[in-house]
Image (cartoon, rainbow, N blue to C red; front, side, top):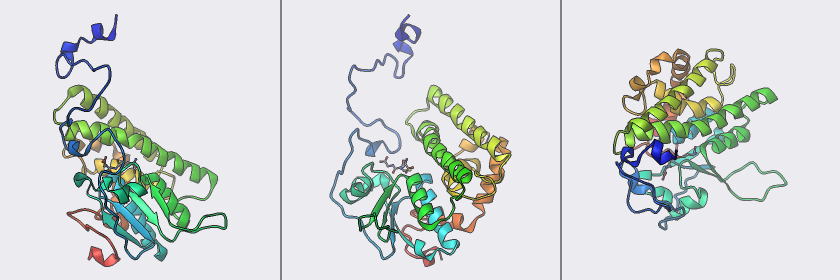
Length: 293
Ligand SMILES: N[C@@H](CCC(=O)N[C@@H](CS)C(=O)NCC(=O)O)C(=O)O
């Protein structure tokens, strides 16, 4: 019995659809953000990035992936690391800013967040010059190591932090690109896709809930870059700050340990500032603490 016998094409969506031998891009898929999607990488237009006065130039947007980094900068500043001053420039992904030649030089993957450190802590073995960093977890780790903060030094603590940091990077695309896409952004509601990704989103919440039942933070008693990476997605989902009424749909109140932890982090002043940065309804560009006034 072939797969087509088990699942006849009439039941496909649209009915009768059979994938071509070779996929080609014929039209936009519809849905939110479809206008910026293409099956190719690289710059689409010439445009240099603006540069401010601070050591760190962040090019980002106030999405969960962007928030991880602005929370980290605000936490570093709150903790007294004056050298963590940063200029945060808004990259409007709905307008295709991520495909400008300047941005693509910093992140060939054309996704926010991206960082240039113009005053890196170089050793004798390093070439002089700025350091570019992309992928939110790589930026968190880079800053944690630069300032010696929010990353435990001991082997167990450091490894556990990296475990959860990598867990977040591997898991969140199922929540965002999977559940969030099909529940909120897709041009049609598809039961199969929503069921598949709602199941995975709930499984991930359960992973966190069981862990947080026994640990105040993701890594024991210490607030770390693992919390900063995980909270903007799963903490904000639990607090019903993302994806419309998805909190009700996924029964997020059932995950009481995630709720406790999410509330703890939500209350931090640096988090309250960090989530405002690079948002058109918040602090569009951040160049100093005064921008929050
Ligand atoms: N794995 C990346 C994901 C970054 C990401 O998906 N960024 C989205 C916004 S949250 C983006 O820039 N999308 C623009 C696009 O896909 O063109 C990270 O964690 O930094």
